[in-house]
Image (cartoon, rainbow, N blue to C red; front, side, top):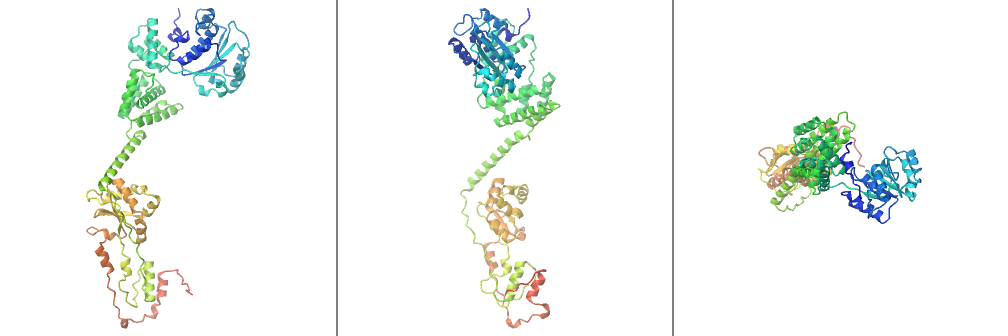
Length: 585
């Protein structure tokens, strides 16, 4: 006698023998028992979960001569004919190969014809493969078929079935079977068929099924035939290599799997499924159809890595599988993906490293701020007053014009002594310094060196400033670290005054970068920060610089200027080539 595969020999004959689909069984059996059978049903679910089996049992129950509580007797002639595939009451059509308009027209032309039984059942398998024209041809008859006709549509991809067909049928969804249900099924089949299969072989059948009853029995057939590779640990070796970031081990495991005859894409899909299982286990929702060995493997991997690493690996491997479809050598895409996942500087690992580094910096900064205490209140310094020009005559006005122009002309003689308490123009041009006073001073040992400050500033520390502050401090540079503060030099005094308004931002980014508060002193004269000198003048120095003794000039000693030398206006004109005089009147 010809051998029949296990999934055909042990196909359920009654509704009660279908495992793991209680909701579908109850709906169909109650409809037959109460004579409330719909004119069309849509059965959807993964492969091997019982869609075709449920449709055949429904056809037997509708034409059985002695049904019992909605179940077929499986002994009368109509029941036996359906099981043998010779019944005129059940018409099975593969919509994947008969998907054109002409095929549907031929089927619909026979719908009205009678059959020996009470009900004619049309089973359209893979109905989502119908073309648009065939779907439209089926709609009218599917909505209002003859009273003796029942349509059963089966599909693994219900989302591809048009809404107009789904709305005309009662949709029943079949689920994947749990590992316990599959284990019970395999054990019963082994016992009923008298197979010599040990526990390891049955566990392999359950693990290979992935929730499909037909796949479980097909795998059991393979175990009986001795075609099981017990030492295929490719996926486990790949997971170990990913957990330990060992690129060499990952490539070696992939080569070993390909050497056993497995395609690169099959290995990639198996690794992707294992990563998904590990992610679900890490999230606390392991799939029910997982075998104990797979569950333990997923739990072990999830404990060694972070969920972020698993999600990154899923994205990288998924992109590689998509690229493998058109790649001349699929192994290359898979190998590149594995190297990226196992390299320490890969994007998957670097994102996590960046987050951890930022977390450490934030913790260090918070600790430093807590140790420093509450910030001191910053008192705004009065804006520097512009120098008051000497109202002694044209000479003083010329001196002020020359000073503002920045020329190196010799000082013009003053016609009268300066007023008491006034400051000379030369002393007012001395570059003052300013510190924000917002950062608490740290000890000299805790502060970075000037080289560290320059390097950090050159490496893009200024990019952390606001746009306004970044523009103002674009010409600034660090020159020294003295007296517990960082000295920053600016080109001129107006520039320094504008930068003083935003110096607190510089102190903030320095504290975030080095982990300690660093006051910043602004100056415009490099000589003030030379070794052995203070970065900013003290109050006594500032007061002494303003106490300038006025020059005593004897009017009798003054002489008239040489007319051949030209007037002061001519001197100014010579100092600024191209300038023109404007008549004040």
